[in-house]
Each structure stands twice: as structure tokens, then as C-alpha cells.
Length: 240
Image: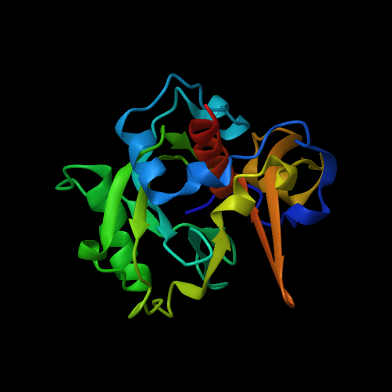
């Protein structure tokens, strides 16, 4: 899932406000599986960042949802498993997201939702995931209250993205994403007479959001919106 309030945004073209070069990266020793288990088992006092979507929608009725932040164990270090959604989907088309979706009434815990949706979207077997814990709720512009569920994945063997939902499955090094030098703050301005302003009114004429660009070989991935915001709060927990 990912925020898609401004459906036509090209996030990398929004005005760059700055990067967090002054913030420390999470040390590699803290990104080892055992250290992550310890951190989630006994969390320190920390404050999640609140982004515009969550602040604006905090008091409004929202639908429950959960996503799976799957950390794949590789010899070179943990990798974050991400998807690119198909372009024909009604919500969040083409965006980079975590596997996830709406909560069902019978779901006893957000982890149940996240694992079920991950199985449907990418073929991840629930038995292959070790749940570490959850991050605070994130309220998206599409009116979901999303619980990020963090899990360790020992192998991606046998994963098969559902072609109707996912166009690509890929990995990004956790160490890269936990380094604020790669966190860009950008601002999008909506002209008062634009189609977006007319169709989505009332919405703010300006919107600020995080962008985490990742380039590998000839492939470019733009992680932004709710997905980037949840990763940012994972950073805040791990650096606390």
C-alpha cells in the first residue's frame, strides 16, 4: 500500500527542499537480525514522525489495513522486499509499496492481515516469516489506518507476484534506507485551477513528502509517500 492522493504526481520532479545529511545512519551492527529482535522485544522510548497525511486525517473515520515490511536475510545484509503495483489498478497504480491490504473482520491481529495479503500478492508463505513487531499506525491520504508489520524472511525462493496486482518484486538494502542522506524532503504545489485541485477538493495547495530514490544498474526506483514515511519511522525506532 502507498499514499496516492495526488494521482498524477511525479515525486522526483517535485521541488527538493533538502536532505537529512546531518542525521546519523543506523549502524550496520544494529541491522543484524539478532539486534533487530532485541530492539522490537524491548523498545526504547521513541517518538514517531507525523507526516501531513496522518496529521490531516487523524480525527476522521478510516479503514483498517496492514502492510508487511519484509526483511530478507542475504549474505550482504538485510534487504527490504518491495513491490511495484500494476498500472491498471484503481488505487496506487504504478507505485512502489509494501505487500498489504485491508483488514478483515476476522483478523485477530494486523500481522494476520499483512501475512494473508503478502501471500495473495507475492506468494509469501506465512510460515516463512518471523514477525518482529509493529510500527505505529500510519494514516494515508486514501483514508486507511495502516499498521506496518515488520518481519524477517529467510528466503524468497518460490515467491511469485500475482500478475493482476504486482508488476515487479525487488529488494533494496536496509542499510541504504536507514541512512537519512538518502531521504529527500520534497514539496508539490497544485495550481488552484488544476484538474487535481478540482477533482480532489478540498486538498492543500501544497504537499510535502519524503522521497527515497534508489538506483541499481539501469533500474530506478522512487520510494515515496506512505511507503517512505513508514520506513522513516522504522529508522526512528532503530536509531533511538
